[in-house]
Length: 391
Picture 1 (cartoon, rainbow, N blue to C red):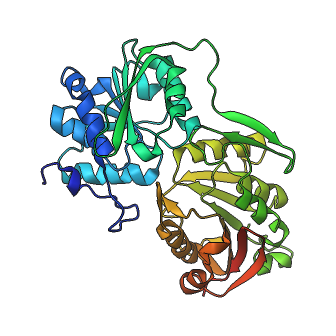
Picture 2: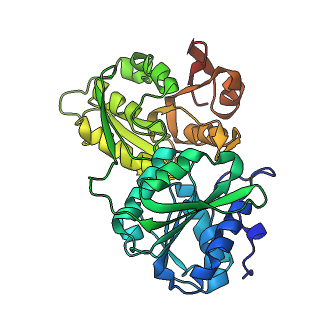
């Protein structure tokens, strides 16, 4: 068993590379600013939101002897990394994972928060704190200075009477919010909008990418919806009299976001089983709302997963994917390449992977190497859509 140290934290099972780190100076600054209060509290009084790989949770537990810290991490890989790091440092009993709901923040006295890039996500988190935390709660919200904006102060100011900033240290800063203002209106999330272009209702929680709007890459991929079929689906075999009907086809929306692609696939193909999969808790909650709002939740299963780890080999006929080109705030293609590898594993022989990506990324060679023969279905000024066939 190792003694806790920030530089010994690992990102696994998330992408690991020499330029990707499991903690940074903002984690240490948040903990230092909150240290005096943490010394006076029980673990249950402390809530951690947005801990990437365990630096805040395990740092607080190790330095202040806390157990029962309540934690919410949007990324499933973050949850897995926190659990693995806790085992390494003998701190497995120091925290409990929670969804982003009242159980997370009810009666909380201190909230340690890694500031999200999305103002909507910050708005949802602070609104939840204002509704359910202790009257005297103090929020220590930190991040790298290059990612902080004055708009973050404004969002915090909707729920707190006092918002102040600490001195900068190692290119990091902490915003401290106190003086809780209980909201009188209804919760602002999830947002629900009708997309007239698609004829779909879109549901989005604060942390969901693009909110209720249609991402332009997804829009381009949807223009090929009538081509998103495996070869056998174009002329399905007829079952002989007395023989069981052919098995239903399975499609997966990998990195489903708010579930727009999954809902569109299910609506166009009522005889398909559709799986919507994402690592983000906000995306999964949003996708569940979207498929329910469009009446296809009986045919769409929404799964929170690390890539497709919960899907067996050779189990899907179609996979659609709009992969990210970044890991956190760092431009990195590692996640996309892992998506391609897992798609190749999960696709049945004769299945198809349909991918949309920024044209400058030129993933075609990677798709041929990791999946199989790949052809371009279309291209515009920003994006390329490809079809890949597993070997």
